[in-house]
Image 1 (cartoon, rainbow, N blue to C red):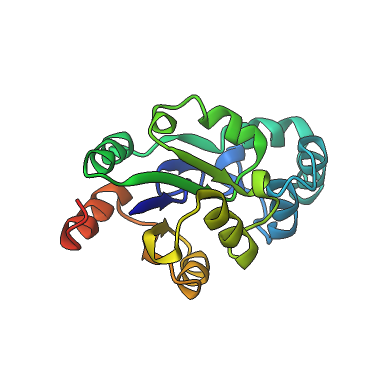
Image 2 (cartoon, rainbow, N blue to C red):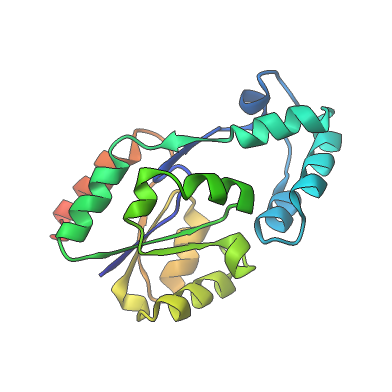
Length: 191
């Protein structure tokens, strides 16, 4: 089975919102248009930072520091989970909505030594939960939908994958995800 993980809130700790990332209260809003454009490669880093600065009433420099710090590190136990899954005979992949600047940083983290099929929205030019990203991923890894187990914290992403025949595990944000994922995999006899 190919075990395919989202990154943020599954294998990677991320900032919960812009107020936390900036270290001051800002009016939170719907940034999905900017995030989608940036994370699919249609809006470059400088354009994204300038647009977010306008929306957050912050300087581009403040937004750049906050954005660079958005990814906070690997989830505790993430690397050992991937090692154990590989030892159990599973392939390891990721499929994440992320931008090239965060991707470039994460490539140097220990978890990426174990990810055989690294895929992301900015590389595929598509964004979860759009069906095109799942189809592009499945084609790239040459796996049948039923042979992919997908883990994500966002229900729409899980539902889109399930609609294509992928096996899925919704892992909502809350208690640490790695122990919950381990428990689910053991209960299914996959670990």
